[in-house]
Image: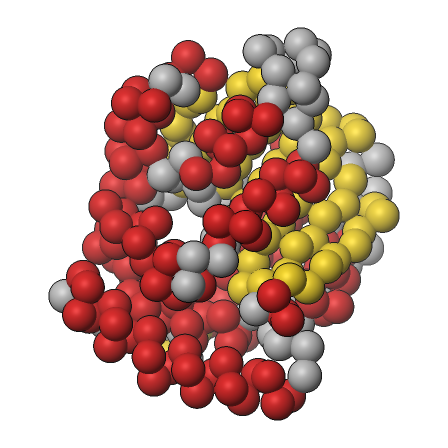
Length: 261
């Protein structure tokens, strides 16, 4: 199953914004790369600041949804935009001896952090770190048993292209799971969250890391991301079936999942 209209999202305005700033597609790709080049060494700290540590629980929920096999059945996960290895290591901790993870990220700086952590923490023999673009993954068709992308798909220039390529590289029966920032479940909660995030997180980020810019972009990019029901439709249009989602922490993030049948 594939989308009946491959050009449906050709004029998607989200591809032309860096946060709230209108940009060209090439500019967005370059600017997003720069953000993660700056924060690679402190990426976990950045997530702690932006989520008050909640990202750790959200990622555990994501691994639960991936359902790594605990027996010795071979299982190959691709974790996209996961350069530091956080999801990969969590999945391997839950999986059997024959599980392995390919981490694919467009940013070399993030990948270097992940490789170092894999070596230091004993995951090197079951992980590989590959530089690649989520929109055109450097892997053959029907190659992976599962696909994950955590807090990363909103940074992709053309999200629909990334969703289609996720479908392409999954084996039939493969599971697809996305964790991403979302929209609060009520307008009142959204107003409170907006006030706190825009007024607190960039100054805290500057105080801790010396640069407020990456935090400002990441907050703005969450507001540009589609609401859960719209993103669910985008996943379905890419070919996935049995697509569902769950809002977590009042809607700060949403977990979406589906299958290539």
